[in-house]
Length: 490
Picture: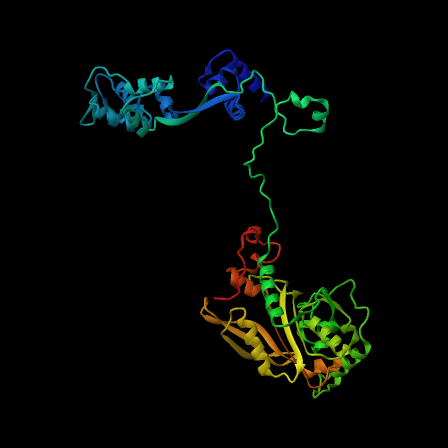
């Protein structure tokens, strides 16, 4: 590159201009693309003035080159016909198929030959090969004129080439050798006084600089923030959910979920190998839970099985944030009961097959109200208020079963886009068998509900595959370009 630059500046020193950078590159043995790059650089710094020249030229195709050597098809056909004539089949056998097909028709059209009952004979004594002459002229650099170009292009004997080059002359900053300007005024230049002799590159104060890349909020985080704000506006307190690892006791047993329940199987739950067991559990509370499972109490007959501590001590990745609720309610009972409203939004884990609507890890939203004298009507009222703030005003409730709530209700909303009722959550009132072993008063009730974070986010952002939203296959372009969350499912 440096050699090309010096040669080009040196060539301009003794002449007024260089008409063609392409021709100059060929004469001096340089690659034209390299020369063009040098010209653009020198033009940018004012060493040369470069004007871009564009020209269309014609080149021969492979077929056209062949005809410059052998003659055009029509002339080849004419020359293959002897003075006494020839049978058409014999003529065809003397020539290539392409030459015969094209040449015979053109020679007949030009009235050079005639076909009389299968015998081909000449109608003229001699012909001139205009096509060959034109092709040879184009090959030598002569430009064809008029309709000849279209005729040759239709016969696919020539094709166009777009050539570009630069016409060069000296620029306002011309010098036989480029002097690289300084880009920084350094301490050394100031101390030595060299800055007085050096040329400095001018500052471009209009340049925008390198675009900065900031962080981007994930759609789940945006929807999570909206849900969190709704809970806070309704007077709820956020529960600490920073323990992904939980014991089976708090995840299942404290919720009055029997140890034989299918959800406690390894096919549905991720159990830990190390540490495999929990270190400590509240002994007095554990005994009350054990007795409730085995014998019942608080109006219940229990499950009537041999409850095992080994099962309760197993560590797992929590399957729901209700494990956090059980801890908070137990703490509330020990500290002295006060009416509370709690919520949590965090990750849970289940050993499920991954498909377009299920992942092995997802986020659960949970809310609960703990107070005296709460009824199912209070639960329905709170749910209507909560979902109304999400933009969901058409709700229906369906009886359901949960081990730790009675009564239990599935929550359905009418989806205007799908034109049908879809499940949006689950709810219920915590059973006395769960609450009273904690030490909560008998007249205290807890209403609770839960839903996933991914499903409403998918609806709001028009995503039909959960793997496009969450997990290692997520498209980062979605994270960078997703709009602001607006709650309200339509």
